[in-house]
Amino acid sequence: MTKETIVSAVALGKQVHAPEGILTLLNAVNLSIDAHEAVAILGASGSGKSTLLGLLAGLDQPTQGYVSLFGQNITELNEDQRAQLRAGRVGFVFQSFHLLPALTALENVMLPMELAGIDGVKNKAISILEQVGLISRLKHLPSQLSGGEQQRVALARAFAAQPSVLFADEPTGNLDQQTGQKIIDLLFSLKQEQGTTLILVTHDAKLAQHCDRRCYLNQGQLQEAE
Image (cartoon, rainbow, N blue to C red; front, side, top):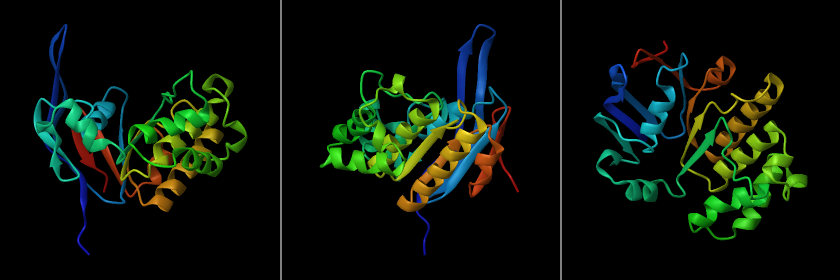
């Protein structure tokens, strides 16, 4: 069976202008990720992990090299075209949850599906919130939920549209160990169930151990663990 490459980075570089001159965040990074894989990107704080994740997802543009997503060179696309390519096919989970404060848990999960033009969003949102154990919290605002509950809403929102690929940036970073473990279990059971490709940035060795592959960023260079 031929493997389908979902995301690939070729000779990827990123420089930014800083007061002390030009700063190299990433240097000649090559990475290829196949469908259904789970890949962890690890590294010290400030090593460029989140920068790399943003480039792979097309949220930012590289200074050198290119990124291919679903077989398309996204470096050649403008912001609207990249957003169109991601719609309904790419999910995101962030360390700081990124829930909309004025919307209930249910509305937060429904919104991206509505924007992607998916039908029957309310029932789908209720169903996945039930899966993550939040059926009694549908009408709660983020401020009325604990950190772990907010992250479960964020997971439900990310998986609701059944994306082909999910990008997660430190998904357990703001949670205590016990709550973090629950989120890890949930993340991988949803990934397994939906066959999602998972690309995550983490400091959490426990979380990284669940992945098929682990890559380490050091001084802008990416190396795969043996």
